Length: 401
Image (cartoon, rainbow, N blue to C red; front, side, top):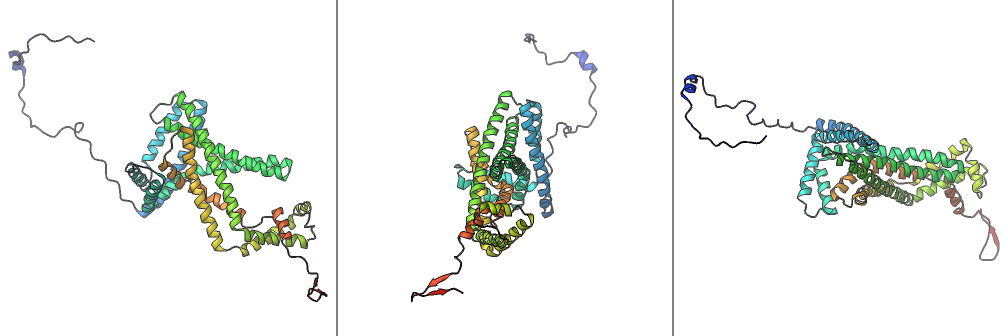
């Protein structure tokens, strides 16, 4: 509506008739403003942290992690189906959940954010120093942070395990080699599916955090999440494979002892140790297989040392943890052209729940020969020749006792 400017003259004196109707004020003036106009009350001070509270916070973190993982997976499905409103609601719920995180974890993340803001370079070493320092100073927060990420590891490794089982079953139709190839392919495929599902959902909620989620953003979330998931899977596969080689190298004496013991059981059972086919056929007998395996594990355990096991665990855990950070950085860069060193270091720490089972897997596979046919045959080749006639210095033959 157009406004009409006032062109008259203002008279500050009210008309006499108006003055006659005015009632004098006889109350008491109260200078306190109404509650609706008063300044908002300060937020109540947060209760001091306690040891029991920090311990309970670990359970809270795991519960929130389960919810976070569920929101990521749901957001992936909703992105594929085009249900943008559901993704926006998930993003809002995610933001609200972060404000309700356990106190120790919130303090940890605030401390890291403050150090990051004060770090002009944000290089790898400074990020490791600052994030690591904050976690050392706040072990309860670090524990809660890592615990919250555990459900993501369950999705990734669980999908890989399911894929390996399915792939091995399909490949078994083409023999033992087919089962092995199928298992590896299935593991990688399953892990990629798990990683990509998490990354797409994370990207979706990130883009919907402003309350809108456009079709263009939906396409970006799908492509960026898939690329990042593929890179992370590739790095995981690389570190897992290299870790297996390292574990077997460090534990080679124990593995050799196990192979020798297994060969001894099979030889005593009358198996032709020069024939791989004969060995494979013999190991189809459940009783002989179990006896051979038990002998190998016992010999490997006796030959292994705590020092070697500790060195193996430390080496593999360090490599797997570093791999988590490398995967995050490389995956984000490949997907968006940008990467953050602090996010990579945090991911390395968060991936501890995945690094531990991967390390344990490689150590388990290196604890003995585990009925490896090549190892059994090689152990027989390394056996000293049987006793026989020996020519002495005088040229006469002597029979070894």
